[in-house]
Structures are given as structure tokens and as C-alpha cells.
Amino acid sequence: MQAYSKEFRREVLAACDAGGKTRAVALRFGVSESWVRRIKQERREQGKTAPCTTRRRTPIWLKDAESIRAAIAQSSDLTLDELKVRLQTSLSRTLCRALQALKLTLKKSVDGQRATPSRCRRAAYKVAGLAVRD
Image (cartoon, rainbow, N blue to C red; front, side):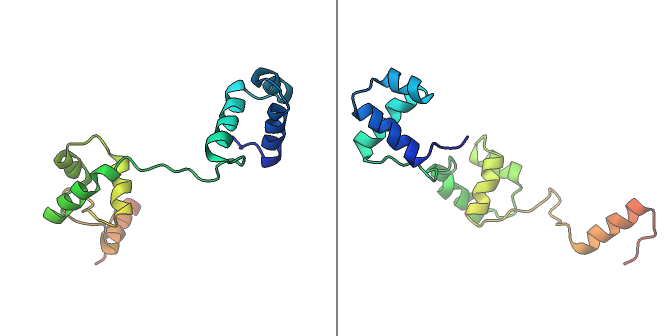
């Protein structure tokens, strides 16, 4: 959903400043009463009339960042599931994003082998029914 333009917000606020009640202004401009109250409150408390252009969310994993770093430093060969158990958390996708943001890596599989080009090639030959060449 697109944010209302600055001009539209100014028109709504001007109607409120001219003595219009919240409900009347909302009906006149076809917006909700809560939105009119919210932009009036934003102007009153923050002095702004423009919409926010960026979201200011803090990641939920941020409070666990140090424990994630410590767990990886202690044992860098953990899988994502093992790390999840060690941290005693229910984060999964978020935990992966946290590792990416912290620039930390984990091993990719339980057996500890990564998919190297030669392993990928062997798998492709098997799928195609060809003899494996090494």
C-alpha cells in the first residue's frame, strides 16, 4: 500500500487546522479517522508532515548476537539445526539471516562435506545416466 503524498497530508492537516473535526475531515477526504488522528499526532509530537520513507526495525536476533558469535567461535562446524539447539531458540530463517548479517558461516550438511564442483558434476552424470568421469 502506498503512503499518502505530502500534498495530500498537508491538505488534510489544513482542513483540521481550519476547525474541522476528525470525523468530518476523514469523511471529506475518504480516509480513516485513525489515520487523521495519527498524522495530527505525528505533527504535534515530531513536527513532521511527510510520510516515513524507511522502516526502522531492529532485528529480533540482535539481542542474541553475542551468543551467536560465541557459539560459532566455540564450534564453527555446527549445522543450523545444531546451532538452534545450542542457543535454545526457535529462530530458524531469522537465525540464517543473522549469520549472514554477522558474516559468520556454518557447515552445509551433517556429514561436513560441501557441494564442490566435482560432486555436482558427479551428481549430474548420475541423473543423466552417464558414466561418472573423474
